[in-house]
View 1 (cartoon, rainbow, N blue to C red):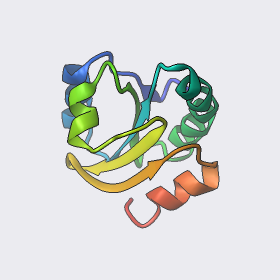
View 2 (tube, one colour):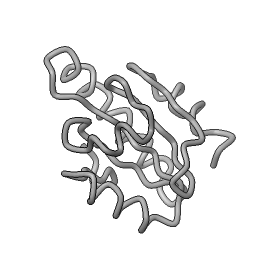
View 3 (cartoon, rainbow, N blue to C red):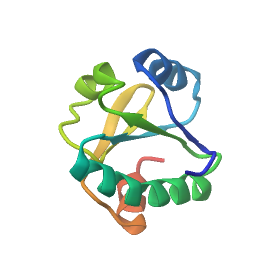
View 4 (cartoon, helix red, strand yellow):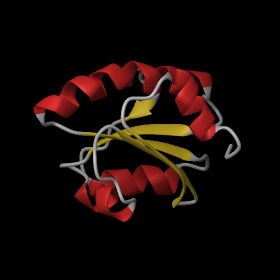
Length: 112
């Protein structure tokens, strides 16, 4: 994964990154069960590319839903991969399932 994507290991770290970012945050939620692993690995490249493309306009983070259960519940994430665009800690856009780069851009555009 591209270095521009933060990977919090727990809810406290997720919340810290969220508080410290003065930019909107694209939270990309992943899972560790067999079906989710392959889907999420494929999405790592998409999210990494988005992080590069939108550098300076958003902060990207990859959160495992089992390691960040509080954030998962707070933002209504029910599956992986899922995406939540956050502004000042509030969800402004959601996406779920495998998405193309164009679909992720569409999720972001109009909110950045």
